Image (tube, rainbow, N blue to C red; front, top):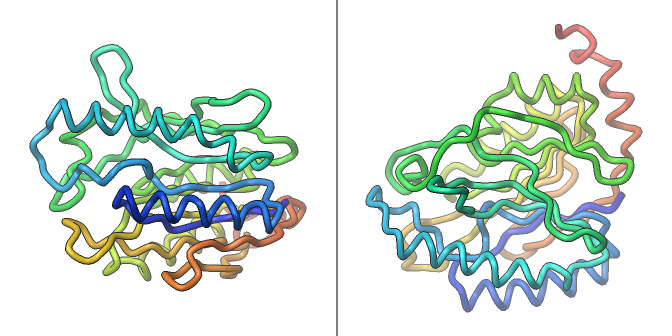
Length: 256
């Protein structure tokens, strides 16, 4: 399976340019699966703790608009997250998109930070803490959206459930990229699965300084590829059998 991760600018005009380049990359690399960053289709709104209904609805509308363009990445399957309304509640919903069936809700983000620059719990509601694998062809995939990556017990349980890939769309700052990559490597080792992540970047003068660095990590924590400003898209051929085998080896077999 050929998997692609990326870093995309959260400023709308820069994002549109990045999108065109991503589409070209995915076509050239014949990607089977593309992971986008967390809520990528609008500027990040969680820089303030004050919820604004108009800003939220604009974010929902922007994702509606760009979701209609996911076909441009076909025949690749797309993993991402987006803001959604559900009755009188608001969520950050992980989803799968494929050419045959379109949009499939897959996971609701359950662990929400609420601090300077990432006022998520002030803007939307927590999920119920359900981490259920989803299947894409032969691949079994588990979502761990941004902060959820640090719930290593969930990574272990994903491994026990036979997950091949843990997908982590995220929005994290430049100052923390090393810490996040370390988390991705540990999640891969604990689960015996490939860890994939894509992140936002930001231009000079933006309210938040997002750091990019998407990654593809193998089931034993080996870094197979990372993105950068100079190389914002990375595609790697992965063998799902490696994740099957890894679950039979240390430390996975020794974990309850």
